[in-house]
Image 1 (cartoon, one colour):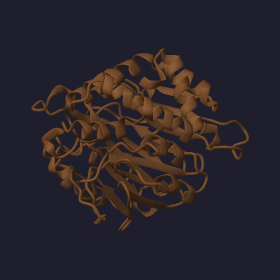
Image 2: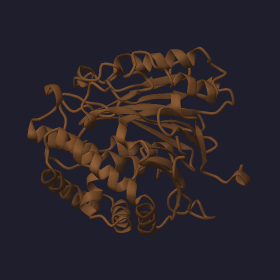
Image 3: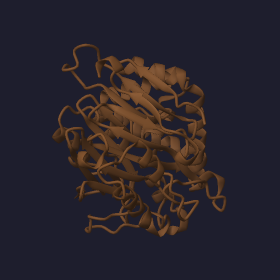
Image 4: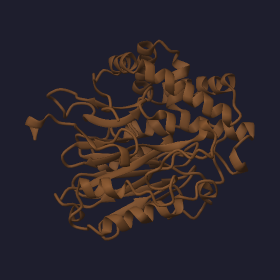
Amino acid sequence: MADLPFLDLSPDPAEAGREHGRVMTSAIGANLDIYLARFAYGGADRKTVLEEAERWADFIATDNADYFTEMQGVAEGAGRSVTEIAMLNARYELTYSIYAREAAVLSGTGPEQEGCTLWGLMPAMTANGTCMIGQNWDWLAGLVGNVFIKRVRRGEDRDAGKPDVLGFTEAGIVGCKIGVNSAGIGLCLSGLTTETEGGAVLRKPVHVRCAEVLEAWRFSEALRPVVQTDRVCSANFMIGHGEGEIIDIEATQKHCAYIYPEDGIVTHSNHLIAETRVASTIERIATSTLFRAQRVQRGLKRAAGNIDLDTIHDVMSDHFSAPTGVCQHPDTARAAEARNTTVSSLAIDMKNGVLWATDGPPCQAPFQRFDLFDQSEG
């Protein structure tokens, strides 16, 4: 496996987008092809997808001007249309709205979203006494090699404007779905699917919500982008703070339910645990969600109070029920367009602003370290 690309981006959204687009041009083109193929497999042709993406571009422009400006920069830098970049940034919502409208979903039960197994550790659980969160991010196998780590530093006066951010994202997507900021706030994300997903309505996209979580200075403000407004589709957000706080939020279309660490550990996969007002459906097509979080929880508990990076890497490399285990590998029984894998395993030390990530499944790749702060800043 190669080193993950690392981009130090300007705090100016337009320039950040242009640099992102220039450096990741090839990967952006690959991701566009991957998602268009995935949508086609679900029954939606290119014309339909781009018509929907145009609607989302217009919505994002009014919902979050800085995010839209950065999308425009990505499009300019990569030589693509804003509509194409909007497709990537709203691809989570597009999956549901297109499939629902076309009535061409897999197994008749809804689209299979990201797998993902999340974990959170309170300071008493870790060997170095820091609060940590992390996950295996499982999604389309073709995305391996088309993701990167971005860092945005805002100069000496960090109390002005937005905090510094370090995070993981897909080429072409502005918002980091997994990351940490200089206020000590961390974020992880996984997919959910319920009986009430999608529809023609436009609401703040998941990736825009992620960006806004990591733009918050206070923990209470970091929760707001998730819980303040209804959603087009469901998602699970794990939000933590370096001072020792973690909340897992099961955010369905109209409701939120909350899960907190027990005995210093919290884990989550892709089905609803706390939310009872709407039925979870992802386990009908991704049954591994029923055991992945429990296996990670048991593995972490065995090292409680002394959990280090090696422990995390080992636990997240679990192949029980392969190929659809915690460490996921492509299932050759599935169509090529729908094969998932662990694209990256990630761990975040929110107190010290450090993110570790693998390039591909953790069983095949070591953690690579990325720092929000320069080493001299300690």
